Each structure stands twice: as C-alpha cells, then as structure tokens.
Image (cartoon, rainbow, N blue to C red; front, side, top):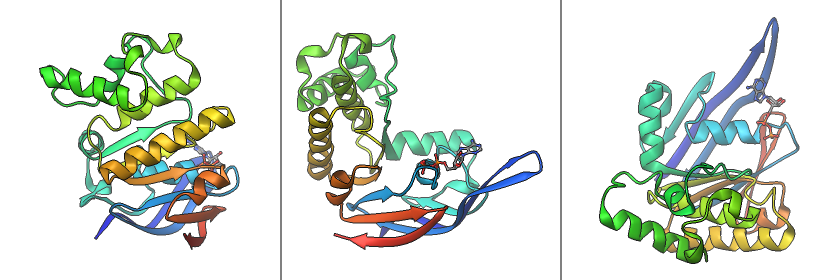
Length: 225
Ligand code: ADP
C-alpha cells in the first residue's frame, strides 16, 4: 500500500498580477519502506514538492495522502499533529535549537519527554550516531557534521514512518557528507522507515530505490534502481 500518494498536485505562487506555477499536476506514489531521491535543476520545484509531501505547506490544488491522512482537508494544527506523529525531517542547515543541548534537541519531537526512558532513548540515539559523549554540548560547540548527526538522531526520535531529507549533505564536506549518508541509510534500513530525499548529489541519489527527475515543476521520469 502506498504510504504517500500525490494526485494531480499543483502549486502556484501569485505575486501581484504574476502567477508562477512551481508544480504542475504532479503524481507520485511511494510504497512503505521505499527510498526515493528527488533530483533536478535548481528552481525546478524539488523543495516545494518535499514540503507539500511533508505537510509543511499546502498545495494550490490536488491531493496529498500521507499514511492515510488527506492533508488538504486538515487544519494547520491537525497537519502539525500528523507531522509530529508520522514524519521526521532533516534539513540542509540542521535547524537545531541553539539554546538546547544535543540531548534536549533530540528529545524535542518525543511525545512523552517527561518519562524517564525518553532521556535514555535520546541518549541511545546519540550513541547510534556516534555522539554519546556530546550529549551536554550546545549546537555552537559542535561541528557542522556533528550538528547534522544530532539532527538525524532527532529525526528518528519519534519513530517516524517517513523520513524527509532536504539536501542533507549539502552543507558538509565530502567525507563528512558520506558519513552522514551512511548513517541515514543505516538507521533507515534498521527501522524500515520510508525515505524521501532531495539532493544534487548523484552518488547519494544512486543509493535509493527510485530516482524522480523533476524539471520545470513536472516529473520528467522515474528511474528504478
Ligand atoms: P528547488 O528545490 O528545485 O531548487 P524550489 O522548490 O525551492 O526549487 O523553488 C521552485 C520555484 O519556486 C523557484 O522559482 C522559487 O523561486 C519559487 N518559490 C519557492 N518558494 C516560493 C515562495 N514562497 N513564493 C514565491 N516563489 C517561490
């Protein structure tokens, strides 16, 4: 069964009298457990598509179904509840909260933070990404690669069904980027999470099951591994 279904989705931005069609009647199905990469030139609509799939933004028309939830009929609060229950997100610029320690950042998505085992689980996740000894460090005390590893631990904290990643290695040097890639795929395989990522990196894209090529707001072709 498809865990994510995008049907005839368009996104149009209006600025004054000008209309910009960023996504034009896009259709996409992602099966549970699949990993897919969305690739295409800059400005082709990749980030917009990812944001619509993840319920961060709403489509101008069409339907987005995420694990049985039809996002376009939900209020912003309801969409936020679906996001916190169903998805994890990794951003290019990490987006950690600067006033929280690494451990506290990992605990942000956890529903029952006050439970004693929440802290233990967060620490376990930090250990899985190789940062067990950095739990009390603040983001400013961590390198870019370490911050991205904290954000990976955070993305898995609520045991998401789908993990979205927008250029997860875009701000990292090649070696650090490779380490971050490996971690994402390892955790993804171990948990059976569905993975949807946007990337410019052809090697990263080649590690997924399916590559979606997007150009000018349309899916040009789907390439299976
Ligand atoms: P990509 O991720 O492929 O680089 P984006 O999805 O970020 O592309 O953007 C696609 C197009 O939509 C670009 O032309 C961008 O300028 C435009 N765009 C993105 N967000 C907005 C917005 N909030 N308002 C107006 N135009 C936008």
